[in-house]
Length: 218
Image (cartoon, rainbow, N blue to C red):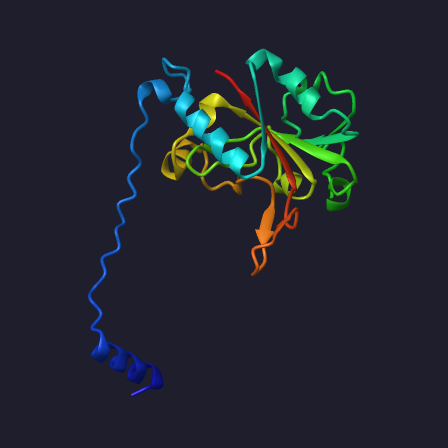
């Protein structure tokens, strides 16, 4: 008998271990028709948006609201004083039409490096694939308006545009919304932060220490 077997035998003699059944029924509940993108309600659930905002604010993110025709103006305000912005090649050009600073597009003419993205004062603007209300999490899946994971892991300031119709209740619904779950995913729940053994919070250790979320109605 090995040492492990001997220890396990003694434990079973003291407190018999009952069999444990692990549930594996990960069934995604279908979303109501008016809560789906393109549905009668435009895919917007005000209660879910409100819950997402509550979670984001609790995580020390800054949340701003705007209408679809006010994205450029809102981003211009959030980026006031920011000298340069890095964006994915597929980010809509109109989003930054009110921003007077320098816009650097990844891949034009070359991919941005870690050194480029670590420049002082540089911010990054992205869209998102889906947002989870219950956990206050934004999921980026390297879509056209998000780009490579590097873009959002290096700069100190991340501005993320979330359409209200992209907000879902929980993780299963969020994964169900992804067009290609095999893409590299980045899950963002507030600014980058960690705590040591004494629970002293430190921000910006492994990602942006500032997160601004722009929620677009409709």
